[in-house]
Image (cartoon, rainbow, N blue to C red; front, side, top):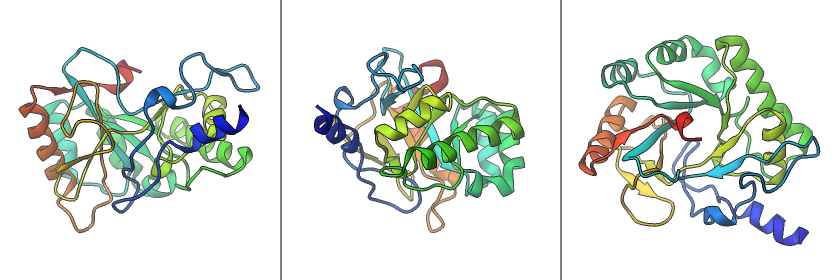
Length: 241
């Protein structure tokens, strides 16, 4: 049983890809991942967080997520404001920290700020103490800087193990958020599994670390056109998890 659990935890995502944080290997089906609601607990009696790349919903919504905080496109703030986009920003302190003012402005126009570790290490295989320090450390940073208590966590590169889930739970996080679709340098979408088109409930990762690609606002606008072409709209991820 222990070997089987270890295989399931390690099957999540093999980080490939593009540059930066995202993305996209072929993840195991969600039903095979650890951390389903109420299935297991940490040593402190907390349920392990669910691991999701898609939300089960009949609402015609998808979810736009962004990692790290490296790119600070001012036009992106205006896009979020004008279009009232409830985007989710997974921030890494060592990357976003020097520009937290930018993210304060994004939060003021409706963006949600969530946890992406202090220093962006690949967590899988690290000891519990190290993983907990990375995750809880960023919880403390975001609370001190913005007064927020993140509930959602995205592991760097999408890699994690059972220890990651234990540490995330002990840091007060309720879901580990991956992605089913990722935007490339020009805003075109690639998919980690399943149908090669957007479906209601899909989580989309728009990687901001694209120094040779289009600016973040332009890539987002292209993703928005595809969302609208499918008859969908952007939902607030925190309302569904």
